[in-house]
Length: 95
Image 1 (cartoon, rainbow, N blue to C red):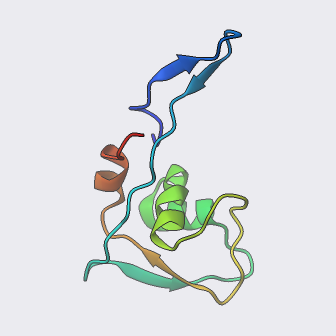
Image 2: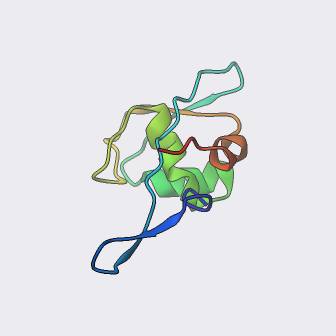
């Protein structure tokens, strides 16, 4: 869903790829939820548990300033879960 609105492009050699998008700044709202990460948690599993969609892991990462590299988060970390992931995912800004 994150790249649904991204254009498909081609390199000079013909390789296809999706256009990059800029991850939005996700403002804090009073409806956001905060959860403490356990040792078995990953961003995709948290997204599935709270949003019903594993693909929304990037929203949690963006809201918490977590960069690329891993879905794993250190146990004990408090994560902010934005209240409206569908609105965020439906309107990501483009590059």
